[in-house]
Image 1 (cartoon, rainbow, N blue to C red):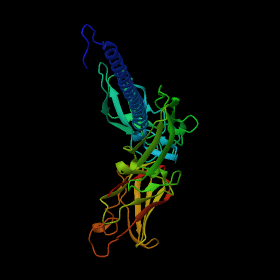
Image 2: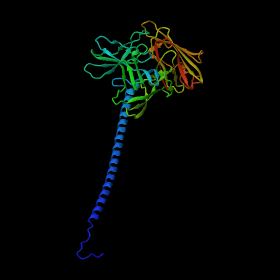
Image 3: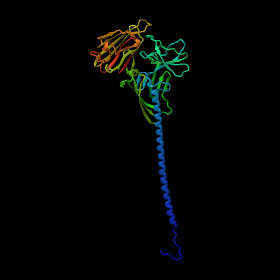
Image 4: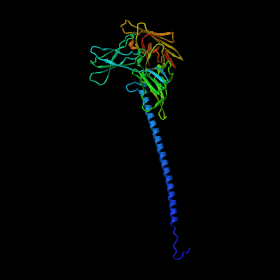
Length: 414
């Protein structure tokens, strides 16, 4: 277009200004949108991180509390005993176990001229003599010392132990042994779960206390125990054979205040259980499984105590595939103060048919080897590869048919 001379060219700055304003507004909208998205992403990332941290913290607390409770249950709280130390289970259910723990009598000091000490709890008949330890003056470590349990027949008095060596006066003494809960109920330790308190408790001579009363509000919502014998067979809780328990499976579920849950399970081998040591205290009417004649490596009658003149003990080994092997051991005592002896024994096979009898007349403290009876072991329980010998195969049960003496044990090894 031709512009007349002297005329001014139209100005276009207003249009350019409007375009500039529109572009800036668009940039602002885009910038705000991007900022909102970034802020949202940061918010959700932070929220997720905080939630993950809370969950992780919850899990760590649960792990710590669960591990601590299980540790105190198995190994014992500070200064106490746990399930691993149990000698015997005397009663149980899925949420409770009443147990016998090793007892330590540390109430004695050595006095000049005194070598016999009266223990403060009864010893279970058929168990070993106490383990005696002495802390000598100016020493900080106990040392094992030889000791003899004084035979007192069937007396209900507290037992006495005599030192076999001389010790300096003022030495400290302690005796550790298998206590008799039937005479002293305060030696029992009970582990139990309380569903109302949602916690596990231990009860013993020192009272009742919660295992790891944690400050984090963690509760035990479920708790279960299962009981097993040395053959890994599950035993009925509260059944007649609870004394054969050698292992306990413990499982529980813990819950935090925020609802996070964790399950913990472990198997506890009772290291002090008689079946683990091979020495099984017995009583009249008791039955337990033993290896058959070919599998057994040791079988003897030991820890004989509380013997009066004319007492006897009768054992019967029964198998589904063999005849019954019956052993009657007769004891005698020349005087009330004399040492008891094994007067005689008789082997019947099958029961009622006497095949061998002998009068060894040996001190009862020596015990009797049940794998070495009769000429060449023909009439004992073990397998000697002799024609016509006694042989029990398959699943064998040993029963104490009669027992007059105060205490006895069977030492058995497969």
